[in-house]
Image (cartoon, rainbow, N blue to C red; front, side, top):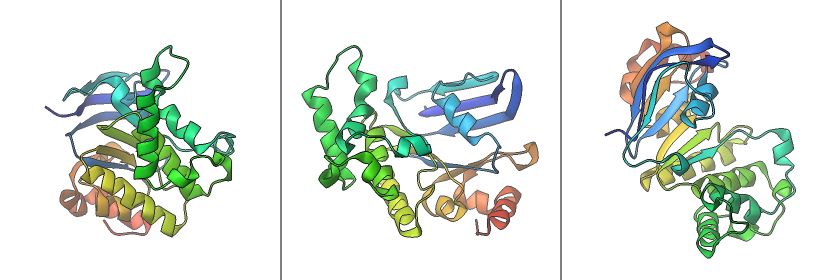
Length: 237
């Protein structure tokens, strides 16, 4: 059974559709990149998967024992969030809040999980630093560690390399690929078509009805949607 299935989805706001007829399955261990033009509905789809926005029609079904509180999410940062005056340790630990409930403190297990994920992403030495004093790449690693504290099953990432220089972007993509290789399912929104086809196992291209695509990287390379979008972005599918 797929870890996540989206069937005949129509998504939008106040009854007005943004995207329609979305169908795809994500199996455990997949690496799915969601691509498409600005305003095509990529972030709307991710918010619907997170149950933040209900579908106008269709279904989103979780399987393989995936609970709603077992999805890690790394959103795009706003300027205000980049200036958040908390320590890296505090930011990362906050990823366990979905398991704390009404407890006013972190358990030893939750603290250990945060420490382990900081070590995993190479930021243990930054634990006591103020988050807003970090570089863009360091902040993204902290947010990725935070998302990992929520899950060991599936991560939803919204443009995780946005605003990073080429070296930091490359490092971020390699970190994410390493997490996927360890068995964590990745669903990532990206404008970087070259990184998408390099790292992902599947592509979901959303836009106009004529450019909808879901399938393997090899099939995407051969599709009209893949060739046209790659040319528009100045890359190669």
